[in-house]
Image 1: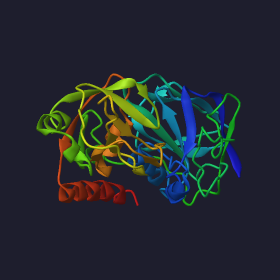
Image 2: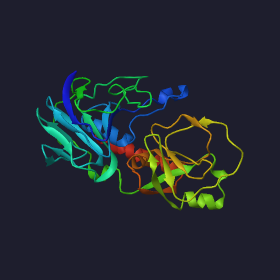
Image 3: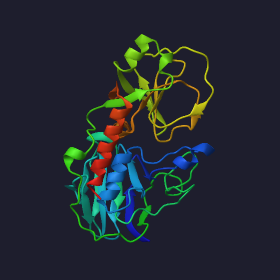
Image 4: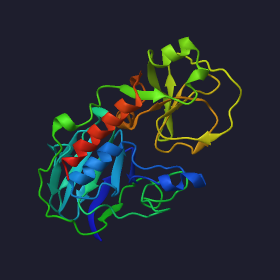
Length: 310
């Protein structure tokens, strides 16, 4: 292990994340992991890492760090105005930091979550096979918590290739974060909505409320009335749109509960989850119904974009 970064300011909520613990869902453990898995994977690939390595997930504001040792980093996802020694730094691109260089962020310009990968991966505590930080259980990542001033970030191993800056994901292959249309397929309980309710679900505009975190977003907008008897609890997944008794939809995200009994009227497709991950309270969004075949094509397009980095 080599200490490469020292944290001067941690940012609002910066945690270590990888691809989570999907294998532990059956045991009632939240899957967790990076909210924007595309940005997470891309950051790792740009830095020359396996896509499942741990990265730093930065929420709304970025950290201030100083390089204790020369390293290569890549920043993807939300545009938080990254800077190296005060000069604007490119995103979705490998950046070489020399010893003493400072990586800072000027402020949020677009999106909600940025990802910082370091060539060689990030050394972190592992819990149930994952380095992702689970704040509720205080496990994984850096002692189960978000970053603090004074923390030191070390690489998990030697970089697999020389630190050469400039490797990047071309702009046309990056997610269109400005488009807040979330493509979705009808959920298993969509028939509990009447015709008006279904029309509102796939036709009205919703807004992310202040009740929004890594578990899920409560959405402001038209109330969706559901009918039918109470459901027994069933397994859930990120992207599920639940409608509780009050009719205010909830979009489940990375740290969602593993089971629940509210009707699921839609599921956001995996290719739209990077867009969902970048939403912040106050952002408006629309659900657009698509077929399973269209969802599969969208997923393959994102996979092809990542393939260009390998």
